[in-house]
Length: 79
Image (cartoon, one colour):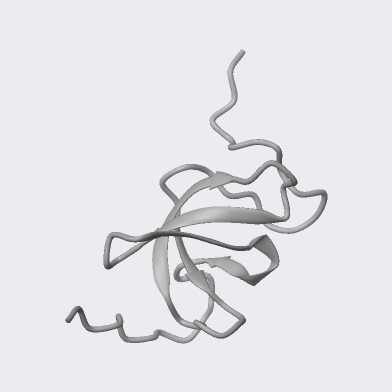
């Protein structure tokens, strides 16, 4: 049996899978939407693809599923 969950998963918190729509719920770039790509080796950071196409690593603790009862944030305008 294969799992679609990206690994390694952090010990606590919501489960994220490749392709999940996420938003940065905390931190300097709070409100930034993106698509979950993968957990980094230690499981505490993850790569997300932001709407501008850039792939960046963020702490997993700052991520939330987009639409998970969070206020709606406007997308950052592209230059």
